[in-house]
Image (cartoon, rainbow, N blue to C red):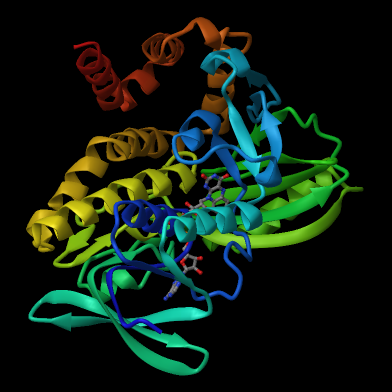
Amino acid sequence: MKNEYDVVVIGAGPAGSITAKTAAEKGLSVLLIEKRQEIGDPVRCAEGVSKVWLRKHIEPDHRWICADVKGSRIFAPDGTMIEMAEEIAGGEVGYVLERKIFDRALAYEASKAGADVMVKTRATDLIIENNFIKGVKVSHLGQSYDIKAKIVIGADGVESKVGRWAGIDTAIKPADIETCAQYLMSGTGIDQNYCYFYLGNDVAPAGYVWIFPKGNDMANVGIGIMGNKSGNGKHAIDYLNDFVNDKYPDAKILEVDVGGVPVCGSIEKTIANGLMLVGDAARQSDPITGGGIINAMEAGKIAGEVAYNAISKGDVSANALNEYEIKWRETIGREIDNSLIVKDTFVKFTDKELNSLGHSLEGVNFSSMSLIELLYALFKANKKLLWDLRILFKNVVKYELDFER
Ligand SMILES: Cc1cc2nc3c(=O)[nH]c(=O)nc-3n(C[C@H](O)[C@H](O)[C@H](O)COP(=O)(O)OP(=O)(O)OC[C@H]3O[C@@H](n4cnc5c(N)ncnc54)[C@H](O)[C@@H]3O)c2cc1C
């Protein structure tokens, strides 16, 4: 086993594999470690991604695409349906992935670019000298090893310990974690061209139920509710059981997943001397959708490039790695901040307000609207929303003006 690399990446999820691939493509020596024996398994994900963003990182492959989605159907508590169809993004909506295969394919891409990959290898601590992270302590098949690195990447997901080891505050309050439960089901009979979302405080308090098609009459049926909403004795899985028993009493459960998604928005710091955090470890998932795959990949690409720049200049201090901090905050960070504003508003909505929103958007042709027009239509229908989302409105106008310039 080699015991010295330019970059050691902890965690072979989308964030870690893209970081490893990017850094290896630049010519750095890279080790990607994963504590599980199989990359991508078990899955804790509904597996939905945007096509356009995914293609920026990898060519779609039928081996890990379960469904090609044309649109979404969103149901207000009173059953009013809003349909957002494929014309919105010029025919580019989303895929539902098979993450067990997808995550492995990303790790394969990293290995093809030259990265070494070790599974069943758990990071147990960081090697720290003179306030600089200098490598990782790992446990592999019952043996402990020290592996030196110029830069360590913490890509160890929502339960990340790497940030804490490096002295970065990554703690999340229960109110900032979306607790999720999901069944892979057969026999729901849903239209496999659509993703379905159900809103309402009886169905999913301060959250939603999703149904994502997986092909062959299978679907991921899941729920995410805010962590502080499960204190009344009813947990995410109880709400999911109620929903499933009501809507699909004859469907069969093929798999159960439970997990948490950080929806706290950007944390203050994601770097230290010789270290960067990426993906869920850096709390980069979207606060409103809980989606984190694409953000993890975007951040991983930036981190891989910044690792190369820093190592080439011989400076891996937090000062040099600040390039990563600046770049991810300018791109995905901006989206995360806007989503946080929307989430903080929507979690307070009563069923009556959700219904009124549903009525104002029912039948709207989203394809011909810009984001500003859509927000304006919402505001006209609901003045309280205008007030609550005023900062978002300002941000979007500023962003569109910046973009036009
Ligand atoms: C129920 C649910 C549904 C979701 N649905 C969606 C969705 O539809 N779309 C979407 O975009 N996102 C979704 N997400 C979020 C998405 O799964 C994550 O945002 C995404 O996986 C983040 O990627 P990552 O690489 O940062 O972390 P992960 O994918 O979690 O990868 C981290 C890896 O690090 C490994 N690891 C951890 N500790 C160590 C250690 N000490 N040593 C070595 N390896 C370690 C883990 O085993 C894991 O493989 C969902 C999440 C949940 C829980």
